[in-house]
Amino acid sequence: MGKRPPSMKQRVKDRSEVQQPREKKKPAPVSVPEDAQPPTAPEPSTVILPPALQQKILTVFSRAFDPVLSSPSFPTVLQEVKQALFNRDFAAAFGAEVRLEAYAARWSPTRALCYASVLIGLEEALRDIAATDAPSLRVAGKGPHDDEAIRQEPREDVRDEDGSDAPVKEPSELAVQNAKAQDSEKVLKVLAIGGGAAELVAFGALVGHLPNLRGDVTLVDSAPWGAVVDKLETDLSTPLPLSKYAKSEAARAASAAVVAPGRLRTTFLQRDVLTLPAGELAALVGPSPLLVTLLFTLNELFTSGGIRATTSLLLGLTAALPAGSLLLVVDSPGSYSEAAVGRESKRYPMQWLMDKVLLGSTDGAWAKVESDDSVWFRLPDALRYPIPLENMRYQMHLYRAT
Image (cartoon, rainbow, N blue to C red):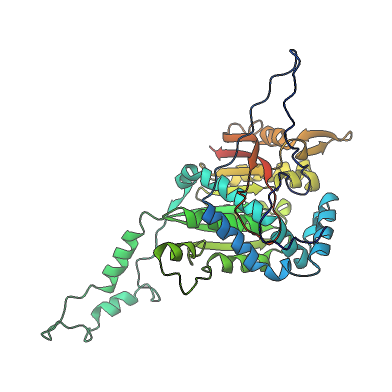
């Protein structure tokens, strides 16, 4: 791993994550034989996030992991993580907090931007499963019967100019009005299997970007992401530094936090999802439709956890998820997402295995809503981050429980 460039300018190169090859520059036009195959259509690109939001997301990472990015040992730790990932030794790559932080500082920023773009592109489908929030109709900080006692207390502090009692809205009325004001606000419940730094920031960006939406996100992973999640959760809701000379509304808006405090509720559970009892999985899912994500996780489960255990997880989700729930799978495209099956280790694409389980053996329990075999997420040149980041390519599949 070479030294980090001194410039803060991000240099974007067309290569994907650790396992992805570099994208070659387009060659000069050449003559094509008549019997050659016609050129394939260009791969689609994801929905682009507003540039200001993209930069805010990167600032969250650079602020949270500044000590990591500036540490002299960062290149060494990063190389250890890369080697472990190359060897598919995920326990070694993610078993220590110092390696988790290095991974989060290096690869999670691009992942978070990509995931946020995918999620915002699915806004309509996500709003359909978000539940209307039903806040308690009681005064904040009081018990369920305390507003009745408050209603009966005299209000000597409120008077008209002539000294007579001024009309006072009862606390219970205020609570009701506040509840009505939130009637249009919905809560999107999410179960992020294999979720960590990138997923948390992506959902924070989604909730912060879309009006009248709050998030209730449960991240489940076998790696100890807890401290990293806490750190990022704080920075997501912390405004960016604002110059004392910046007094315009535009400047204040640009410095606002990615997501306002209280709009994103996050729970992290360190669990091996492949060994979760059916009852615990059902409890995590709950009775209402939700979004379940497997973001660069499913192929890892097929590969390291095995076909049988991963199939059992997918069937367990099939049994537990309420109708209308969504399953979003994002992973590496093509041959980078293959799993070996049987004694002969015949390799099958992750998408084929997934479709065989969800669509071929569940008696119509799932419908595929959207699917892309290969999509590029490209970063604008204007973004700034302390180290170079790369574009990434992925496949995406969205299923709905029927």
